[in-house]
Length: 446
Image (cartoon, rainbow, N blue to C red; front, top):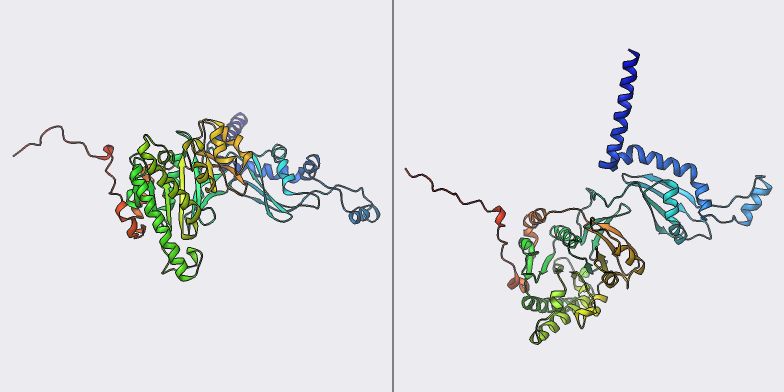
């Protein structure tokens, strides 16, 4: 009987260990909540002061504090570490709010983040300044970009679209009120189309006009026709559509001047035109020409895009430009247009120069990170903006059918804009894979 009990206990222990190991690989959130979080919290609590000391994140106490320690407490004067104000566990990591002593700045904590990661046994430590004198340590217990899972509460609202997950566990949102124009770069199979697909899925649920420019005969964007207010599928149509958008922008400026305001959002709701988001699938197709007779068309397109990028934010017209490369080799006006695009998202690239085109002028330190994105991580990218901040993101896997279904469901949200009516796309054809097969034999008669 004793042998049987021992055998059952051993079997139970092995099964439990196997379950923990399985959860660590296949269900990292479950493993983190059950095992990782208590262990990391314990290591942090017991080793905090020593870790801060050996990492050089302490300062000498003030004269008054040193005097009080020597004369009243009769103890040795100890260096002062940042004070812990709050510790909070999450489903993906641990968040700690620190009060910095005089002499330390957030950059000092950020420079030691790699050492802190190893000391506390977590996957990564991210430092974010919350207000003067305070920083938040965002520790992640596992690689959040390996298997992306968007929070259920992340939903489009206003002009904000949740697109991806950051490596610190927060949601990367495309906020058109804050960053009106953006550029997305990436090589083939890098996840650039997946990023745009998630963006369209979110925008389709908002009361905005979606304008597509897809010079690959519309093979990418024609599927979203039920939700598009306009679509151009070749450079000639794109030139005409951009002219219409410039005219629409000028009409909206006249409207603002008439009511004495300087921004679309200052107008009363009943007078406010619907925002317009222009989605350019491959910017190079609008710049490149095959003969001299195409130069005039190219000049029209480039001039129109530059005018839109410079002026259209105030009238609620936003640009979302994608491409594989976007440099001076595209021709006159390329770098001028790129300089107007505040938001930058760079997926895996084929060369360092492409990463520099997208990131070097806003966040130079992020260029090496963009150059080391592995090929087996489609959808992973570096997101940056003109403020100098940047971070790793990855979009969740979203199928074409899911996005098409959302576009059809919210087709009624497409606003009525008469100027864009000539470019309204026809319903997309049914894919061949969804057409029922023809009968191979004739039906019997009689």
